[in-house]
Image 1: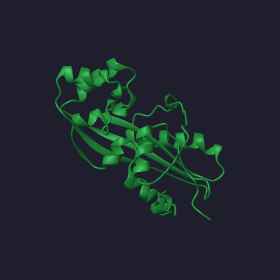
Image 2: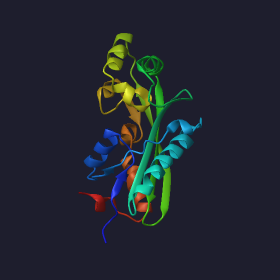
Image 3: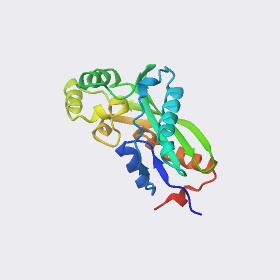
Image 4: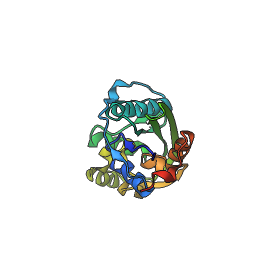
Length: 197
């Protein structure tokens, strides 16, 4: 008997691309979970609960599968930033972030329907942002990219130009920690190479 199908409970193109780059072809099944239902101010707890809720929302659609839910936020000076509501909010956030650092938290929930087991963990990576001119911030926000991302930047996109350095897991900043995924699969008794396509 082979491994169960790997399901990504996320519409994130970046997360899917990360998995593909690592050799895992996931079935994409966005959860459409309403994140406003969860009101928590502690970053690690918030991303873990949101990741788990996303995976749990998708789970009933499958009989046997490994379902991965993820959620990312950026914490800057104790303030939690998910996706910005609009361009103005993205611009305001960049004016605060530039020249400073933030901690990017990503919650990871893995539901193994075959074994009826759930693992929920998180990874945190420190991101240092460049000092930017107002015109540069305006130009970046005008691309629309910051509106689609937790923390108002995409490391794998134009936003990567404005990150001075990171401390910790690189892929975590893109939305899914590959090392943490490998560990979680091992804890469930799987070898990550068994999921290679």
